[in-house]
Image (cartoon, rainbow, N blue to C red):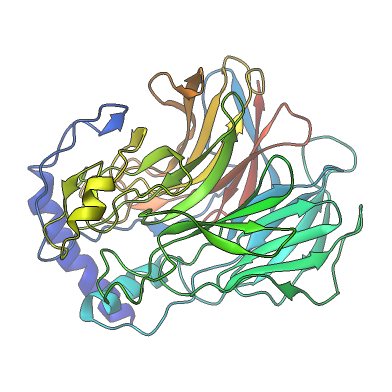
Length: 429
């Protein structure tokens, strides 16, 4: 497999060199992005930096006025974070477990991902980290829950603890202050695994409903739309009745979700399709309407048709234009609302963990950014919070940010880094 990975790197390098000459110089960002015309790629761009990790005290670069320290280290591919009411920090440690490849491109992509530790054996656990002395570094670690199936999203409603495994939502009993759950779980929903495997969760403000992001199996419905049934959507689960339904659809891979407090709207970040160019189409941040359809796989950024896909004119006509572009292939995964004053110099807005691209000639993402909000809407250009995850020559990823959340003190930001195997803590300098 390593031989295939090296061969893929050589072919990918040739494609990158060819496409970089004509790559757009301006990122498609904001409420009115300049999205280049689609250029379908016969051989998709594959460019993945080697996973390097952080050595000899090296840390990400914090924006002016901020500082960063390692809150927890020695994890195994930490992806998502949940802060409990008592201040304990839960971390889902999991990794993609690839399905059987169906094509040479699947083989090549998996070989590349293995080489950079993006897929493989999954820890399949949730660990609990406790900073008992309040110094910003967790000194206690406990295995909170194990033997899960690629756990990702987590949510707590009273004494009910929910886990978003790749194949469905599972509920466990929880006692305040507990450092471990041994009781068996109760399955509440069933989702199709594989493909975009993460299952993020968010509780409604009233605690009566749970929302789950379920990504597509493929890039653009490559195995037929029957295989995509129930996917590329955000699901709603009524915790009183146990009934579940699709809340919004046409979202290729909706991952992080957050509530915007001024309007009460649900927002999400979505990873868009591949194979049309470096900036085409951009990943995006958007509010999510009940019953809304957002285009995938038939179109993008409103009614821009993807000619590679057999069309459905009725769905294209219904497609909602997203609110805010985040640039092409940034792999924006983490999302949380950050109130003004959490970090010095930052107003109300959304924090986004951009895991970083693998399929464009000039890499994008590999940073944690902030989008300011006013009156319930994005109100300006994105700002960096953390950078420095990628080497200047784009050959090495020291880390890759994923989940983001506000710390228990309300004055810090926690960031999961699945290549560095670290939880970073960002505060004022």
